[in-house]
Length: 212
Ligand SMILES: *[C@@H]1O[C@H](CO)[C@@H](O)[C@H](O)[C@H]1NC(C)=O
Ligand SMILES: *[C@@H]1O[C@H](CO)[C@@H](O)[C@H](O)[C@H]1NC(C)=O
Image (cartoon, rainbow, N blue to C red; front, side):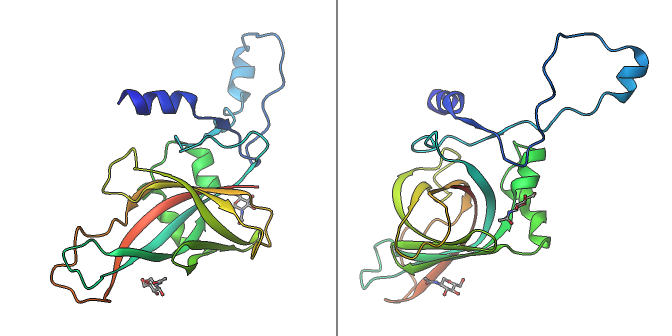
């Protein structure tokens, strides 16, 4: 627990561009009863990125938090006692920026209702090590895994990742994408009861924190 508390403490506070501006600074004054009635609700709390392998670089700007929902795919080798190997993933992406801005501690599962909104794009793999994100309004981002950590929320969830955008195939201004707050998606321990070459798909959800 100490490690995750420490990581939370050092996580960067990153205001979303859509967050309401801070109230004007001024000397504190206690509002009169009539003013108190008109006091607007506090602005949304800034979005705090969960602890990540490496904190986001200062010059990068959070442009989107997407909920991804789909499958992690694996394939069995001829050794059925071995764990199946990762071959990619396929997920639909939904815009979670607004939902997380109004409730920064919302869990990935609790964001499920935004799936009723229109998908903003897709996450898929060009080959087994090249994730791609095609997002309406942002463009295409071809990425590579830079870092990974076991999910601090439990190893039954796929790892948390830091992905960096590659020049080749990228039309967006995206620089880095973090896969965080993952739910599920882990391969079975072995391929008992399956056949060599069989594809195993495991449902997962994740938050993709997208920086330009
Ligand atoms: C992963 O599985 C999905 C089915 O959930 C399939 O449509 C997709 O083509 C698969 N992708 C890869 C890279 O295996
Ligand atoms: C996501 O939603 C926010 C508003 O909540 C909007 O400002 C932003 O443009 C959307 N991003 C994409 C890529 O759809």
